[in-house]
Length: 83
Image (tube, rainbow, N blue to C red; front, side):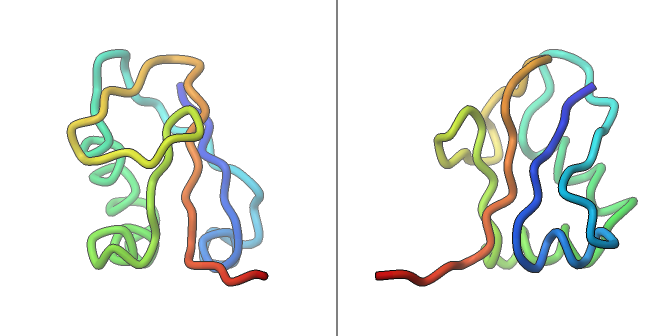
């Protein structure tokens, strides 16, 4: 089981939940996580595919082949601006 932190529009698209818990066996990759999100939260999955939302694993931007292990910190990062 992994917990995914949500921010901004991803939080809104998940019914204002701050995080999601998904069953993802050890040794899976970011692309497997995105497939799960496509099934349960297709709007979030679409944003990831279009690179409008980035996936981070342990506070580093991840690519589709990044391995995910139980206990990793995963976050979906929408675009943000600041100064």
